[in-house]
View 1 (tube, rainbow, N blue to C red):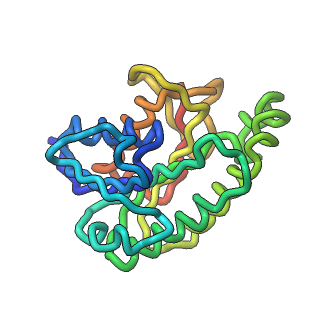
View 2: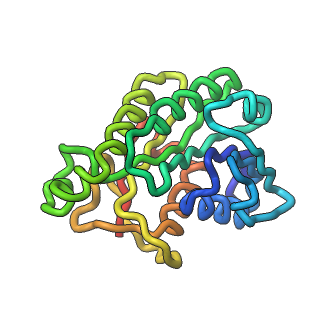
Length: 214
């Protein structure tokens, strides 16, 4: 039987964030979600509480965070490819707030295309188009991963999805430590959300980086 977890989701309005909320609510987990614009979510449920605030202003969520069991970070930059600190500076705010609240478990997202040791990044399109195009975002994601690697008090899991698409769940996806499964290049947000939510009752990938793709 799946244990019901009291979960806090950061930056829920993004496409992946919405899919995570839907999956959490389907499984009847109590959910608190931070959103800069709550109206954009268009999701209502008696076990969902939406908090209007900013990740850069911990006073908007610190009190609620202290009552939760687990944090899911679905930070996104939106359509902008400009230099960003949302992962590093925003992520550090999450870690600091979790430490103050004595919340240890964190599941967070980066991406599968920025690790130069991954054979999948040697693909011409990834190496010469995707990486240069998103270099500012990938650079900040790397800083975020480094912050977590140095955060001994946090039981983190980093999930590195391949190219994100919209679409119905297929369920049959592949996961692999660190590097993208061979031949994998995409994953639906709905299946990514399925994998994320499955981790909230699992310690299999604590202090691990996991890539996911079809």
